Length: 167
Length: 167
Image 1 (cartoon, each protein chain N blue to C red):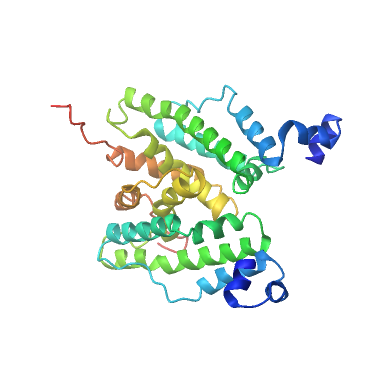
Image 2: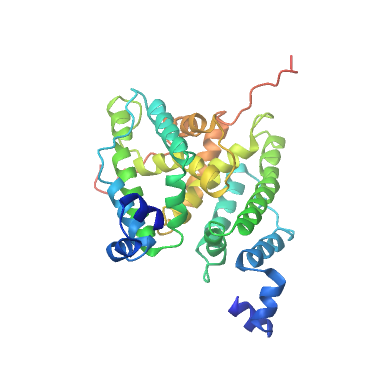
């Protein structure tokens, strides 16, 4: 809060008046991050898109200063930051579903593919390694996790059963 | 710290004298958890072992009171708890490698399979969904994430290249 006040050239009381506490400030930071026009990479292949996305995630999680990592850590301490972090993730994964619909259009995947499960399978190992296990970044992991998910998808691992209305 | 003191029937100052702070207390809790004789499930198949492991993880992460979830959250606040959590995870993943060596012995997997990567691919979606995304538990996710990892493994996704010494 002090750093924010100093950077803005205002008294710290002004910062506390505006946001109440650190959680409120971080929630606004996270909500602002969701208002950008970020789009997932479009490389021309499922595997390429997933790998480029994983590289973006690994870069963000290992950046200095560790803004993204600090926001995730803060979301364990503040209810407001927690909800904002969840909104941001939901927004990002929703935007990424186009990776799967493009792959379906290209004929790389079956039309009934569970996009969210596929995206989680591809990205989760990168988060797990860096945020929870807190291991040093493995430069091959983004490509490897993406390749594994794309390979599993190509053999039907994320195929949804036909819905009841289908004949 | 107060609850621990009350439960132990001692003054809270005694608890602080013994552990210094909450992080020190949690680090000892985590280290004690690593001293059990836990072994990964042995169901007779790779897919079965991974699924049973994922069910154990999902059960632990959604238990009431949320002891495991609270320890993970605390590891973001305390350096000591963080290091203890890392030791515990390293210990658990190391013990789980037998799942992969049994599958190799049964002929389910190629001899050169990267056990750790396979285990992370299988377990990461469960942690990601519950600890980071904080979505409600999906009862099908443990089986699905395990099945996806086993399927990817069966088509060579975790095969290691022959080492330089091989001919």
